[in-house]
Image (cartoon, rainbow, N blue to C red; front, side, top):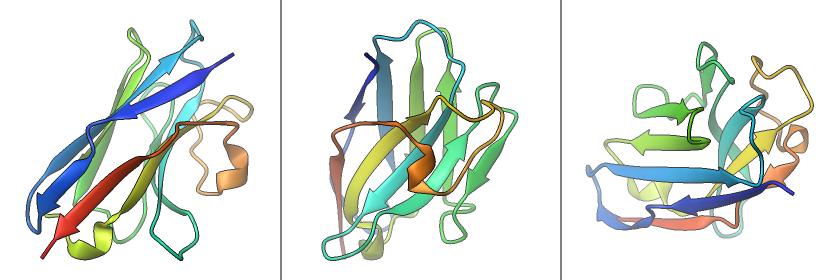
Length: 127
């Protein structure tokens, strides 16, 4: 059974950077796309960005383009979300997720594509 474990969240100030990590355990291969989502209180879960298995395919939400970079290490089955120039409106719970069903070199923005999810990690950006 695949499990995802996020780490690296916390409280930062506006303008700071933060790196979130996602460890995929219980699965030997890296034949999946990985996505990052976030959910603010009272809001729907939204796509932040994602990366295909070979890292050749990356996709970002419009308001994150230029402010974040997603990478992955297939040897260690980990993924990273690097966020820069953080804003108070980036405050949310962040989730990594894995899509093991669709072509692993494609990245979907819809949450329903992702089967496995991490428990979520809180990111708070103060003004």
